[in-house]
Structure formats: C-alpha cells, structure tokens
Amino acid sequence: MKKGFGLISAIIILLLVATLMVVVVKFAFISVKHTSDSYIQQRAELFMQSAVENALLAIEGYDRKANGNCLENITFEDPQGRFVAKINVLKYYCYDLNDCPCANAVNIQTPKSHGYVLLKVTVESNESNEKNSGKKIKLQKITLQRP
Image 1 (cartoon, helix red, strand yellow):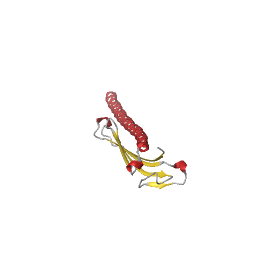
Image 2 (cartoon, helix red, strand yellow; image 1 turned 90 degrees about the vertical axis):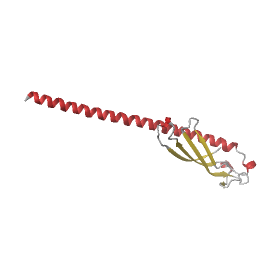
Image 3 (cartoon, one colour; image 1 turned 135 degrees about the horizontal axis):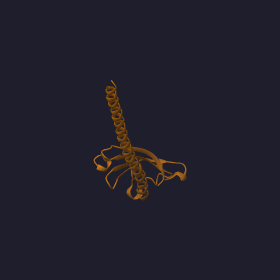
Image 4 (cartoon, one colour; image 1 turned 180 degrees about the vertical axis):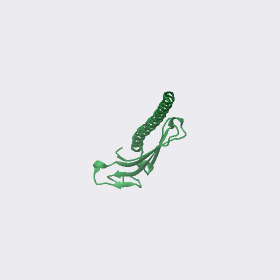
C-alpha cells in the first residue's frame, strides 16, 4: 500500500508543478505583450507631441494674406513609416478678422489671445509596418495652442 501511495503522490506533485509552469508561462506571455503594447503607445504619444509642434511651425510660417486662406488640414508621417498624424485646425482665434481670412476664424475681444488655434490631432499606427507587430493604435487629442 505504501508503494502505491508514493506513486500517486509523485503524480500529484508532477501535475502541480506542470500546472504552476503553465501559469508562469502564461503570465510571462501577458507581461511581454503588455510591455510591447506600452512601448508602441508611448511612441505614438511622443509622435503626437512632435506632430503638434510641427503643425504650429507650419501654421506660423503660412502666409494667410498671400494665399487668401488658412491651413485647415496638415498630415505628418513618421520617417520610419510607423505612424501617421492628421491635424485639423478647428478654429483660429483672431483679434482682427481682417488678419484671418479663414472660414473657421473666431473674433475675440482681447489682443492677448490673438493667434491661438484649436487643433484636433489624430495619430494612427501603420499595421503593415513590422516594427508595430500588427498592433492598431489610434490616439486623439484636442488642444488649444499658440503658434
């Protein structure tokens, strides 16, 4: 009877160890996936900040009077092809509407706020890029900025 009990005990211990190993491997897989997703998310957020700064430079350098209109849509692509940023200028806040020949210009009462723009920024990942590991990320942000 003692030999049979020892065999059953060994099988139960092996099953417990195997179950524990399955749990450890599953946890490791989830941890790696989370780290990868967090990395791509952080890259997208940094690209979004860079795109906003570049959009402000583009708006500041754009000659509205010579062109007779204002920038409304700006698109940036990551040099590695990982992300695309689409920026829509929702509103231009102008003290004097003669300076802003924009359809989406808003007249304001104080010259201190002249030149502000309301931007809607959308960043999407390129799923076909192998560095993104087929992950789909889409970030949106609405921000008030002064060029």
